[in-house]
Structure formats: C-alpha cells, structure tokens
Image 1 (cartoon, rainbow, N blue to C red):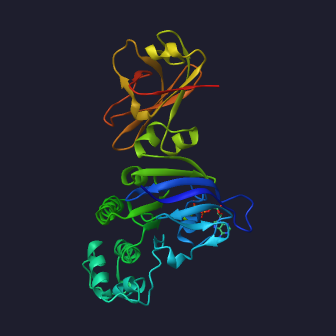
Image 2: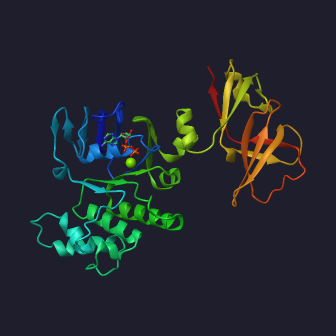
Image 3: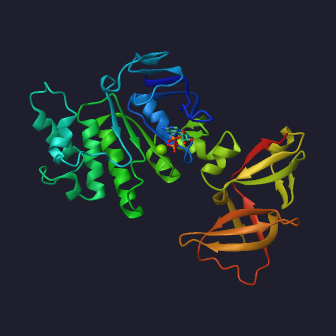
Length: 345
Ligand code: ADP
Ligand code: MG
C-alpha cells in the first residue's frame, strides 16, 4: 500500500529560469526505504522540502497516509504533516542537551516525554550521557541524535537529506548499515537523498533518479543498474560500454569480432550492445572471442580496468582481477557473459 504519492508536482523558485522539480510523480509504499539520487542541483532537496511542507509547489498533488496535504493553494502546514526530517548538517539546537533536543519535537501534552526520548536515543544506539550538548559529540553521534529527534514523534514518513555525506568512508559503511537496520526495525517509511550511488544501491529498497528536476526512473536497485531506461541513468550508476552491432541469423558482427547469439535473428537493423565492465572477461586462449588492442590497464587495488580498442580506436572497458599482468601483451581476447541489446535508431 502506498503511504506517499506525488502527482505531477512542479516547482520553480521565483528567481530561477528553470523548474527545480519538473512534473514529478511517484509513490512510496509503507515501510519502504527509497533513495533519491541525482547530481548536484537536480532537485533532490527541493523534492524533500515539498513533501515536508517547507516549500509549496506551483502545481501538483501530494498525499500522505491517504490525506491530500498539497493541492492547488491548499497546503497542510509543515508541523501538522507528521513528517520527520534529518537535515544534511543535522541542525541540532546547540544550546539544548541531547535529551532536550529530542524532547523539543515531542507533543507538549505527552506525559512521559523523558522516557520516550531516552528510549529513542537508545534505539539509535546512543549510550552517551544524554545531558551532553551536541558539540561534545562526534559527527556520527550527532547524526544519531538528529535521527532520534526525527523519529521520536513517530512520524508517518522520515526524510533524510544526504545523511551520510559528512561521514568518512570507513565510518560510512558501518553507519549506513546501522541506519538501515534502525529504520527497518521501526518499520518507518523513509526517503533519503544521496549523490553516492553505492549508498543508494546497498541501502535502498528502491531508487528514484532525478536529472534537471525530471524523474528518470524509479525501480529496485538491480533493475536500475542492469536495465537503465536511458543513457543518463546507465552512466550515473557506473561505466556502461556501448558497441554498435549488425545482426545476422546467428549472431552479431561488431568492430571487435563476432558474438554468437541466436537472439540476433530477431533484429533486422543495426543494434547497440551495452554492457558493464564487470560483464566482460579477458581470456588467455584464442578462439571464438572478441579481440582488440590493449590501450591501457589501470590498477584500482581490488580490481583492474583494461581498455581495449578496436581498429578505429574505439574503446571498451573490461574489469579483471588486480593480479593479472598485461605487460608485453599487445592484444587481448575477451568475451561478454552478459549484455543488453537495444535497437539503434
Ligand atoms: P539538489 O538537492 O539535488 O542539489 P536542489 O533541490 O537544492 O538540488 O536545487 C534544485 C535547483 O533549484 C538548483 O538549480 C538550485 O540552484 C535551485 N534552488 C534551490 N534552492 C533555491 C532557492 N531557495 N532559490 C532559488 N533557487 C533554488
Ligand atoms: Mg541538496
């Protein structure tokens, strides 16, 4: 069941030339974690602010838990929407203790505010003295306080803007997994913004990708990575190789050689064969494989990328194990164990 739905939402800032959010429609299911990705300026923060009620759209309808919260001029005020928000810089109140920071967002009439606040702080894994002030905590701990403050009032949906961007790489892998577990444990629906595709692929149930305010695709991580709807989405999630190919009844002719594939008989015009670097493999022996000139091998510690060029110098990248040496080797044989075929118009 969907808990949040956006229908044809548009937002243009008064001074701006272009729309920050452009005809965006999507739904989020109850208990789902959705990652919102896109490059800087693609409209991610604006979209969260529209849902939270910190901005009002020019057009469109937003519903939360079956209630229309935005339509035309109508708008349920931010504090009545029951939306929890974690800001990129955490935005904790510096003059309040950790406990007071959490209690601030709780209903004034709630009788056991201390208990609820302490319980939430423990839920997010804080064992600190709760009378400390935010500046006495590490970045990772401050983030947990921000998360606790957002979830303590039991919101209908949790919105997080770049929650991992201020953490260093080692800490990030750990925190990312912990936050996912906390969110799943509470059963809360969450949308988090990130520009890091690794965060999105590993943490989210589904990913929505924005480009210039337009929603490009929304799908489970595997589909986004393996079946991107366009070149923009494909390249956002890493290198995608493209080869032009001519179909015959039993395979494709490419500038690197012949790929035997009965699927080819279905095509009549030139096609584009696309594949990720990890879906190719460089092999030792000669035979029915593709072949090209080794243009470059780059070492990345846990893997190596070999660039292989055809006779016109057009290159594809293939991932290999890091221990492999290509010294003194001029040509490489390779094959593709997975690829997509697209009609090229
Ligand atoms: P992201 O979070 O993906 O980086 P934003 O939602 O912050 O993107 O911004 C989307 C677009 O709207 C950008 O072009 C940005 O410059 C513009 N923008 C954001 N906030 C404002 C504002 N308060 N006034 C005018 N333009 C803004
Ligand atoms: Mg932003």
